Image (cartoon, rainbow, N blue to C red; front, side, top):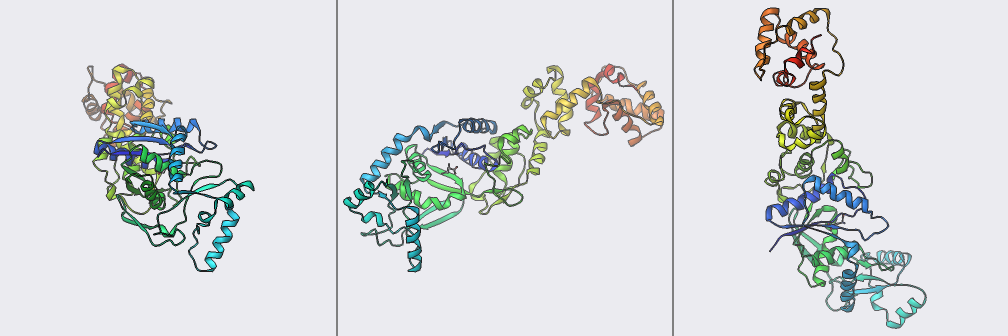
Length: 457
Ligand code: GLU
């Protein structure tokens, strides 16, 4: 069987790190099994779906390193849904209902008072053709429910009917279809409910594995029944735990908090986001994985916790730093070029400064310091200024390399009698204008003798 997975966002907002978790779980699952990844936009709600969000979701997935094999829009598939609905109507598996919300609520109360389960009693199934015609003449338009297969001969007598599946994350799961009302699949205005379009598409597109958040576990019993009604084997399911903010609150597309877009704009590396999104809430340690392939080796749905995981944005900065400190020059070449670092100096600059950066963009600041000197003229004590001037008069001749710093400071140490902080701190201040930063042994060759001398106070 070819593995085919899908990520199915509705383009009603920017995706956040929790949505990225779902997308990445699917992507890594496909990557590990040589399968296909479908991006499906659940955009049947035309009032809330926006093209700009769909575009941004594609940008975000690309940024994360996800390359869908196929992209489909539900809004372009209404004919498929109509054909599937017609088939089910013809088979008597979708039936028309006319009750208003108030009528249903009243019936629910009556059932509860009679100690019956508060599910829909399938009264509409018993309507005769004449009664239906009369209701429609009254101006009522039907909506359509799916007849759950939870009875033997008489739909009015549902009996315990267990739907079971082996969940890739949660293990054995069971839903009793007799505990559910026949779900509405088509509204009176002809629009479809998510469950219907989702299952029709999953069947039609040959989805083999549905990996999604555990907020969908309760939909799965009905969806499995619907797959069978459509004459398709149901896919394998895996419901992963959700991420919550540090406060314990769920993440929401609406607030835009922790959107993938905002993290990218904030200079967080895609693999920092991916590493945290995938590894948090699993039995794996959260550490920065340099590539999707490396992350894939740590990805295992079975090792995912069954309860929600708190997510701390501060961890992202930690992971970002860890990634950048090891990041090869090739990975930042283009970005450094775009921020104006000349190609012949960029690699040396990168290797000198990467160990000090929180974000790749901070490298540009170090280039400015190397190229143009400290941001502000350093202020020295009377004692230090003479020391620094004397030190600069002892600079070794070129050519300079990594060893030059040691040669120079040994010489200065001997002549001045200073050592440790008293020796190094004023020199660092003179060279960079700052009290901390990259190894001066690495920076000195970048400055060159003339560049260094230009900093003599
Ligand atoms: N559009 C649905 C959602 O975002 C998809 C759920 C599913 O994966 O079936 O929740």
